[in-house]
Figure 1: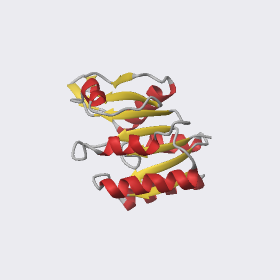
Figure 2: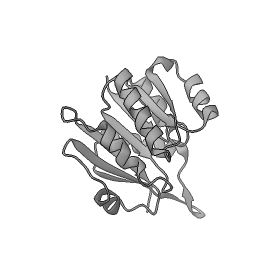
Figure 3: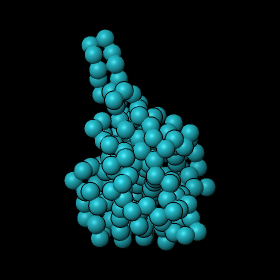
Figure 4: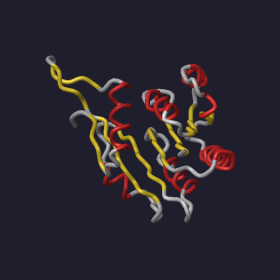
Length: 175
């Protein structure tokens, strides 16, 4: 069983979060919205596989403490799926610092908006050797009217595919 940390797992990544829990992995979810978290939990047959981390990731110290607590109670984190808004530029580094342990390899999938630049994001991070950084850029889908944004289902499926195939860089849809 793996321990996954998902940031943004009650919104557009809620289907991804559910899929991880159904697969038998323990999922710690960072969320700011209790209503969304309750909906996510209600949809899980195995809600005991979910740890709710109510924290605004813009609060660095509180984020750090919540990650430490979930690691203490649920074991080391093996995978991180992070959809972090640009309003908290230090949040991903805090996550990296807290999950990086010499004895534990961790894959981090950073989900970026359509204007995201994976290489500049990667260069801005201090990545210890045991951290395997991956990027997933959200694009658009072409339709008869031109383009449309991705649905939450398409995003969750694309992130799942990127994780399962362990791609270092993925784009969901077209950039």
